[in-house]
Image 1 (cartoon, rainbow, N blue to C red):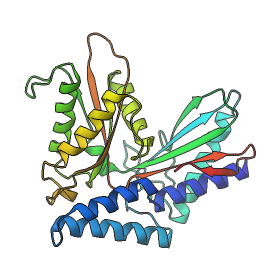
Image 2: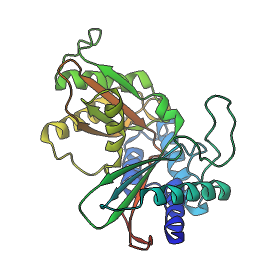
Image 3: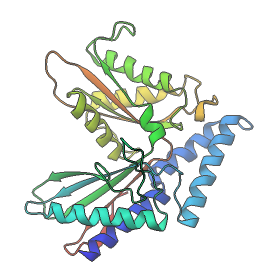
Image 4: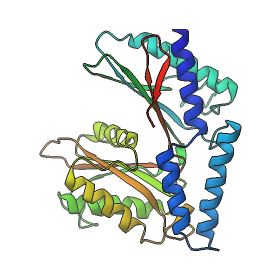
Length: 292
């Protein structure tokens, strides 16, 4: 169990301090696209410098180390209670070492005990599969980008959005327009079409586990993802809302069945500090492979 706690601690450290390669490449591509001498180019260059410094110093890439969300794929018989104990231990140690900021507070009193451990923190989602392996993925999702997430119920009369993919397109782009660079853009969207209010939001966050260079296996959703990014980047909002050619770095869209009476489109917004990492674990809890 100590090996597992050590592995989870390293997962937290690396997720907090290192942006995944696919995200960094998208940021570098965006930097090249921005016009030289503009505020947008300056903002993207500062972002790139921030990424390099955080990795070099093994310090959080952002002062808001965010909500701590574990996704665990595990076989039948996996000790979920034991994992939860080791995850809380790793989060407490990571906070003490400075890999995580002391960001979790009691919602009624505002008290911060300095551990990042409490009701709902960390959040752990277990998914059972028939394989013998254990995969653990972690997202650190900042509060600023969480604040601009939103959910629409179709039809939406003001936006003339009906219950179809075109209606989904309209409300997703409206979410980008309403954000106006808030949430530390350029952002990445995780979207769920369908589900109920709770499962829709949860599934939208799961979309953020996908790589930015990974095409959507559903051809219709793949085309919609590309269209959303291309159209959003023509809105002129740009990095941090300063104007420019990079409003979104990517969009990841999934779908769930829905009730005939409901048609929700849930949008989770991720900031440029797209902290997502994962590991495959050996039977003793040691890290076998990094997933991103």
